[in-house]
Structure formats: C-alpha cells, structure tokens
Image (cartoon, one colour):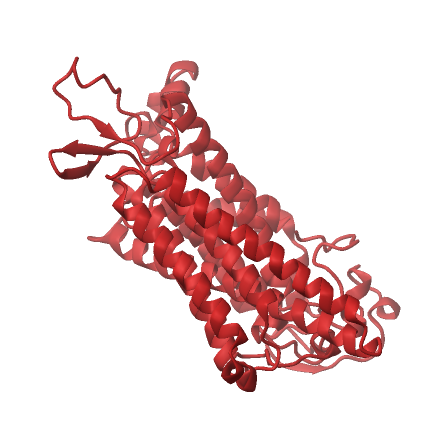
Length: 461
C-alpha cells in the first residue's frame, strides 16, 4: 500500500509539472476558474502547477512518513500496537495524508521557503543515492565472498573461481567497450569538451580501482578484494557516465561561448534566422517529439526505479548497520515495552505475515525513513535539483543539474568502493573482509523473508 501511495503521489507531482493539464481542466470543467478562486488556489488553480506545487506535495509525504518513522521507532514485533500503525488503519492514514497534502497548499510561505526546501531536498536526495551505492558495493563484495566460500567448502573446486573470473572479464570488457563507444558517439565533436573530460576521468577511475583491487598491499587490508567487485563497479560507473552525457541539453554557439538553451524552443536553420546555431553532443539530432518522449519515458523509469530501490533498501536495512530489536511488545499505549509471551498466532489479534510471528523482519522506522528520502529524491529529480524555476516534465532529465548529479554519483560510488577496500571494517554493520558463508547469515534467520510476502491485513507494499 505504501508503494501505491508513492506511485500515486509521484504521478500527481509529474502532472503538476505539465502546464497543459491546467489548460485542459480549464477548458473541459464547468466553472473551473470560479471553483479555484473559491478554494483560494488562484486563477485556474495556478498554485497547483509548477515546482512549488511539487515541493508542497513532497512536503506532505515527508511529514506523513516522518511521523510514522517516529511512531514506529524501536518496534520489534508485529503484535505491538505501534506496529499496527504501520500495517493497518489504511483508511485513516489515507485520509490523514490527503488532509496534510491539502493543508500544505494553505500554509503561508516565508521568505526563501523554496530555497530552504530545495536544500533539504538536496540532502535527502543525495542520501538516497548514497544508500543505493552502498548496497551496490555490498552486493559486489557479498557475491565475491559467497563464491569464494563455496569454492572452499567444495574441497577447493575451481568452478566457482572460474565463474568469478569469467564474470569479471565480461564486466571489464563491457566497461571498456562502453568507454570507447561513449567517446566515439559523445566526445568527438570539438564543442563537447565536457563529455571528453567526463568520459576520460571516469575511465581513468575505472582503471585505478582495478589496479588497486589486485595490489598485494590491498590484499593485506582486505582479503575479500578481487577483480569481480572492481569490474562490476567499473561497469556501473560507465553506465552512470552514459546517463550523464545523454542528459546534456543542446548549447547555443555564440562565437566561442556555449549557452544552454531551452529544449523545446522552435529551432530554425541558422541561414533563415538570426539565432545562433545549436550545438548537440548526441549521436543524432533529436526532434521535439523525440525529446518529449525521452522525457516522459525517463520520468517513468525514474519513478519505478525509486520505488524498487526504496523497497530493496528497506528490506536490506541490516546490511546498512540497522539492527533489529529483540522481540518485545508494548505493555500499554505508552512507549514502555515488555518481553513478548507466547506466539502471535496463538494469541490471535491482527493477522500478519508468517515470517513476522517471532518478530519483525525489517525495521519499520527505517522503512519510513527510506520512503522519506525517496520522496525527496523524486522531488529533486522532477524539479531539476538546484534549478527548479526552469523545470518542466517536457525536459525531464535533459538538463545540467541532472548531468552533475549523475557524475557526482559515479565519483561517490568509486569513493565508497575504495573505502571498503582499504578500511573494510569501518562500515557500520558490515565487515567487507569476510570470505566465508557468514555474510549470508541474518540476525534472526527464522524471520527471514521479503517485504510484501503473503499477508492478509498487513500488506504494506
């Protein structure tokens, strides 16, 4: 259900970035303007359109999940009354969310409101990105650790080691081919200096982390190091580089100065107009329709990826150093707790997923924290990060703020990986130097399960 709420709110936020929606409603709804004025939403509800409207909708979701995060802090069993706030009361929660969203449009904005909220969104958005990068690095190390452990447990079987090197070679070839193709398609034009720098720097970083991974000194710091992790991170870095260079908007050439121009501007040939020529760093010229299609598809992919990574991160809370509390239940409606007695199934009460009969399988409060920063991330993506005034859904993902966010993400990914190589024990909740099966052990194996497993009343994703 939380997933549905996130999807619905994201779709509404996307529609708020399309000015044609306002025109369509004004033309097809009788007394639309009068209703908007009566509700104090401005002429034709202009306050419901634009980046400030997206800010307010995101604010309501942040408040909603923030309150639930505080209320579910320390919940260790689904039999707790506070756990029922997370798993049930959906009608009341939806009504409360709608009320918060409606009230957010009547809250008077103080001076620099948009600037302050933009900074809050940037912090939350970058934190969401960093959490995904940490999980990616954790996945690479866990993969290498498990296959090495299986090779040792199978009396030194070489099949697992051969599989590691085979995957490493495939990933390295993919990263090398990616760097070459990026340079050929996005870096040959003389006015695409930024692309040359981006591709060159990230290709150099990929070579650097591969070299560091096989150094004997690195092996002494982390015996779980290897080419598999480095090759996988290199492939992902080149993917981020590709998404960055494809997000660059066209430039207007005025002598030697390139000026960014709106993507949707009607473009006439330079010999018919006094406008300077537009310079593109893409393989082929994008028409207006293709740009709009790319923007809409990009927004849909961003929305689905944000939802998927939110669920995955919440499920992997223990991999990020978020411990699960021992099974306890609330003694009353205060915060006092006592040890849980008996089975949740024998006591009756709220029906929960079977995996949670001995305690929660993930941190409820961390779940809401992830959805809080996920909403901030979506908000910043839709409003062009540090340039919200020019944000429109028609040019989603095709702007310089998106370019820099993706490039910085690739550099942060490299930094996190190198940190786990040199300081494998300095990560909360994890030791990246392990090479045996201990990585696959969960804190409480009887409660292992997936968020959104079979449930009756407690299906929350």
